[in-house]
Image 1: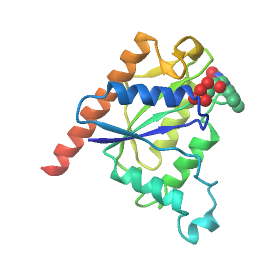
Image 2: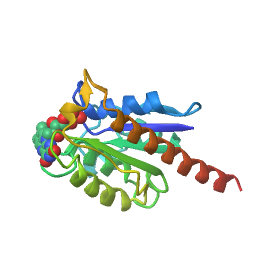
Image 3: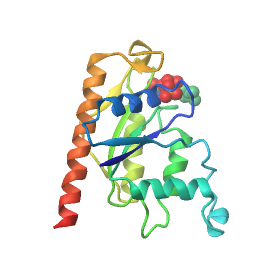
Amino acid sequence: MRILGIPGSLRSASTNRGLLRAAQELAPSGVEIEIFDLHEIPLYDGDVEAEGDPAPVAAFKRAIRDADALLIATPEYNRGVPGVLKNAIDWASRPALAPPLAGKPVGLMGASTGLGGTANAQRQLREALGFPRARVLEGPRVLVASSYEKFVDGRVVDAETRASVRELVEALVAEASTEQTARAA
Ligand SMILES: Cc1cc2nc3c(=O)[nH]c(=O)nc-3n(C[C@H](O)[C@H](O)[C@H](O)COP(=O)(O)O)c2cc1C
């Protein structure tokens, strides 16, 4: 089982990247989580797309197609989805009739310094992912508020947060397994 982890922050010390590293540590055996860095993804431009996807975009879309499920860890910027992440989703929503995101099980989690723990960003993300027909899990919800209390040197040290990340990964694996079984039948 292959899960593609997508951090919505480019910061090397990103707590959201830290959530994905925790997911890697806590994943059941046989489940591999690869983290895809969005640094190289250019701004969406329909003229550029018409000439063919730039190499980093093609690699991103291929990684999504090859994955059994996606795990997105998003910060919240100004009560919403960071532009870096929304931009990547815009690329992955194309072509509109057969986007790589269609039918893909997606787990959402997020860490922010505020009290909402990325609830606003995750709500927007759920809506944006619904349009290209991704299948976003309803829960368990991983909303890490006051993140500065829960990470040390980029590692999640809060037991409750680690438990919720583990639960989400397990739910995502269960959803992707059901999907695989249905496809094989
Ligand atoms: C432009 C910007 C806007 C932000 N807006 C919010 C916000 O609306 N709510 C919130 O809880 N935190 C907000 N923050 C703080 C982020 O939660 C914090 O920087 C978080 O650690 C970013 O995630 P990262 O550690 O993965 O980079 C904002 C930070 C930036 C840089």
